[in-house]
Image 1 (spheres, rainbow, N blue to C red):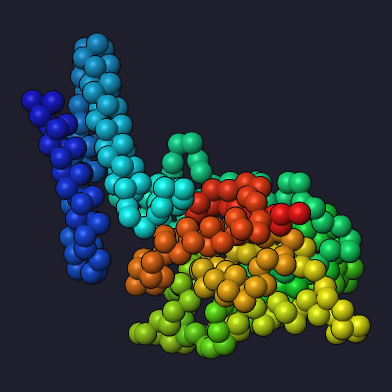
Image 2 (image 1 turned 180 degrees about the horizontal axis):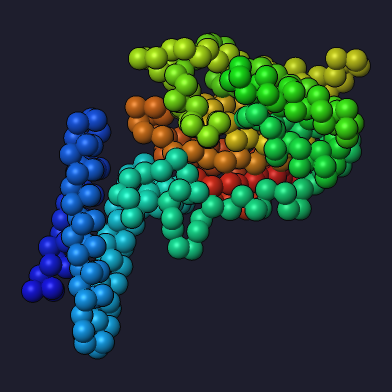
Length: 332
């Protein structure tokens, strides 16, 4: 009987996965969530059977069977992800999509996928950085603290330009960096706009920004129902060209590091920098990549693969995890 239960559960989970892949509207997703919740209940019942089994050997056998069922489910999920046609053979983006198998849904990146081993790799950001006091850093997505910028300045005390489009975040950011300048001598240039493919205004709702102060993602599109917060966006290539030309001497300034954690601007900004020929002049670039639904960022997986393919022409990957962090250094 228990073997039948396990097979039924596996079949139900596989069906739910297929439904998830073929439907995108909100009502259907709600129905799918109910199905997933029902399967979670059934799975918990099976686990409880283990706890309530008096015979230790029987319990051990049940655990082994359940583990095999779960392993089979995970393999099927990975097969479905890797077989998506968006990614060519040399691109691992599809296989590494941030899908949480326990919750049955896509997450924004791997910090929330609960994978074992954990795929979130932010610890690599500050290892073997080829910077010094004379370096120029551009930091896109500084949020309220500019935390990564602060660590870079602690290490190198170089020239840094930081971008944050959310007005309330920028106000806090300005206050914090005034303090850093007074206490530590850190002199940062702050910009109250984001970088993208063109100049425009995006309107967001407060909930788009995340309840924990800036961990929300919005995919660079308007919230059509609640447009309370205006965000100014400027074309990335034009802004970086301005930074790359010294206002005092007119000489060319090299951007030694482009550091990006902008909660969704990366896709259109990178495409803009590559097309404009700016990316090939940047010595080092590292970023956190974010997953979005097709309604927010169309063709994201294929675009991610094409961005990587373009980067390979001029840079090499130092480290990298799709939908985690990765760094690319300019080829000599």
